[in-house]
Length: 61
Image 1 (cartoon, helix red, strand yellow):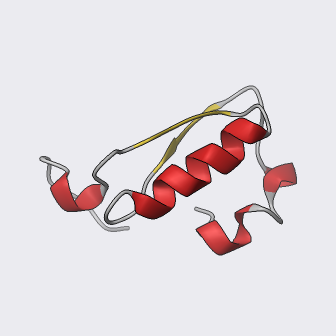
Image 2 (cartoon, rainbow, N blue to C red):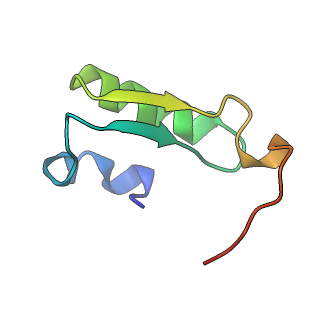
C-alpha cells in the first residue's frame, strides 16, 4: 500500500505491466492517485465512492 502523499516518490516500485485498483475512504484521494498513475502510463482504476460505500464486508490484516 502506498499513501497518496508518497506516491510521486515511489513510482519506481510499481510494475507498469500490472493493473492497479486505487482506493481510499471516500474516493477523492483515490481519484487523484489514479490520475497520477495514468499520467505515467500505468493502468489504474479507482473506486468512485471509496470504501465508505463499498457494499461488501471488509477484512483488516
